[in-house]
Image 1: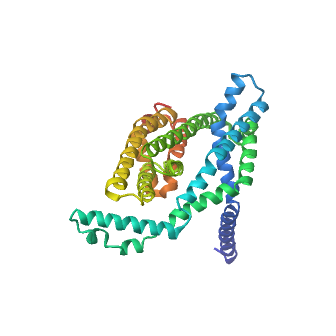
Image 2: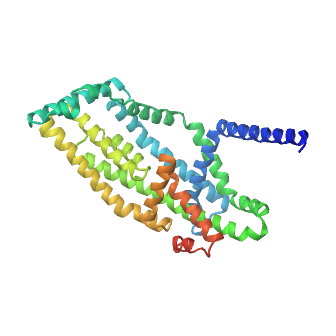
Length: 362
């Protein structure tokens, strides 16, 4: 091996490393564009059934149906903003979630009430809560940071929304063009399999995302009903935050229940702890548990079994493994990604026994 060959190999390796580094930097630099594309793709999957309904049932032309589908999204978003955003911002300020010092003071006061309650029942509160030292080192910055991020996102997402809707329009309107372009790039011997896979993936994920939106809305309404029944102040913002947390499977509802209990106790600081604050919090916890029972036995099985044709235990294991491997993000994308893998597996490896068992309902 000559020195020239070695030098060429080193230069080639350096070139590959530099190309990878530049590619990663480029992806990082355009990360918002990638996010816009992903959100637009999700909206496209949700909008496809609406587009098909307008074309087949109402006999709309393709472009007109696309325009009405995008307008439908605009109306939903504007209605959501007009209905919920002012309430969330107003009630969030009333709740003092944007003030770290205020919420720390509230938690300290709450823990003092809990200490007094436990000592009245002859329980060593110092050993359990270690007086107020644990509370003094408690880092609750994540609460105002979370709401600040939410408010900032709401106030500055105008350009992003316009970009997403613009991309969604062309995804919906030119999907045949994209398919024809893909046909030219796909090898002829795999064309049918790939196109069938894309068609099934589009169908299953469209149903999944629509079902997920319905599930989150149902959970939000049930949370709101529970909070209103027991007279919890700022019920809308608490129900909204807890509903958003349900996007994270299994862990999200637990965090939502704990958050609801803390906020309920903070809202009742002026009342007697033993006769009002504690019973109300327990009732809210019971109500949230009932909501989760309804969700776990009605909403989720319907979405997973009907939309992506997967058994609930199968989905649970997939989400669990994705959570261990990739954290919360993995849990959120686990079901759509697993559905894509199942469809591809059925098209390209139909003779495999494991694939046959996992995809028998697809």
